Image (cartoon, rainbow over all chains, first blue to last red; front, top):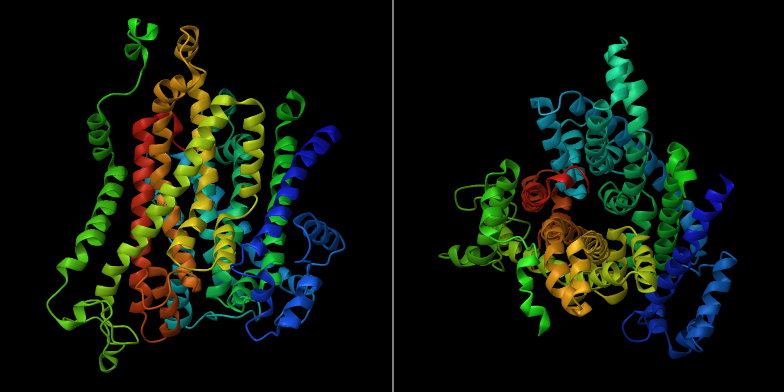
Length: 307
Length: 299
């Protein structure tokens, strides 16, 4: 098991290096002089020169890269040109909100997705199955920002039962979570259905039925356990999609997470914050992918030993 | 050439008769709905602006503040926005921008992903390893974040928008083409072609790629849908095509300010994005069933 873990973690290292390099290049894509772009149009040439040295934009590319990586390792992602705070502090104060939102959304989509997928698989080709299949196509096609606005329209503008925006109390978490959950929910439901149709057709399912297992027992104890691997994989893969959707969802609901900070920082041309958030999102996704891989190994011993 | 005396083309199981596939797609219930939705939007995007003429407000740039924020009526079927511009006219004009940006992005993504995926799958070895590591890195970024980050550093504007969205779609094309090429290469006829001494390049272009194309046909509409979502999402955040241009996403972003009292401004642009993307996803699903029923249920 330890060997398996080490091997998987080793595979992630080049990806981390690549992601860091991408973020390094990103700032240097700024049209014209990156230091000038970051300092803003009002800065004097002396200020621009000072900033250039301060954030490691002078010297050769190798020197610049070494500057970036050594600062990064020390947790120094630069400073926000808007608030003057270290980028890491800014990120740390917004990250919990995104984590909270993402957690609620993924929990919601897992429960509802597995449930809907299981129901659909119990009666393949029935009206219920077709209906759930249709809903899952709608779920992956509906723009997340439009879902959010429609929910605001119904629950905040018309019914006035839930807040339209902000983060005050658990009520304000409901609409953003539901909005963000739809896309992964649809994917999980689809994956659960196909995995469950397969599992319910296996010999062990027939044996369990023959031995008198009740329908719920057959589904939850026998079939779902065996269908868990693809469901976990899809959930892990959907997290990247979820983080992207969070940027939009947080903007719709003025939810003070990383996504909103990102959008505000882009609008304010606060590039060091943007660079920092992009890197943090990528690192989170790499860790999640690694965790998915490991979970895969835990759930599927054949994979762990087969290699 | 020696190869021609063996009458090779007959050995190649290239699926002939595209018409059979099309009619099967039209008989596929959800695939047909998807095709119809796409067709409707194509017609609106191409011909729409020529059909809506006749009075001043038929121009997307016409403004009349006195007519601002009127709900749907006979004069303005979908109402008017905060500057008194006809919402329906702007949505019709907007179909062009959405189609232009997303189609260009898919083509660019394919142009990068097809050769990379094909070489990766066909050559294997070190090239494959390096290429896949590279794709892994790009995939380490949530695709919407990648597009957003590129737009924010490269700057907005049509060209950068297309580059940003294409960057998000090319790794998926690479993966799909690579997988398809690898499964084709495993067939005995490829080995047979090699044994006959046919050059590798000819094998790749004549024997492998044509049989890997169905995977691309299935992926392309799905990518078009994803590109539309990304393009409109960037527009919604205010990083799409600059303002007076009637782009669906940016219309939605502006409409959010008027959600209390003028909800139709939120409803219609979103409905346009949704129906277009729905069409792409349904058509993609239908194509998958038509080309390869075994793939049903996979992503």
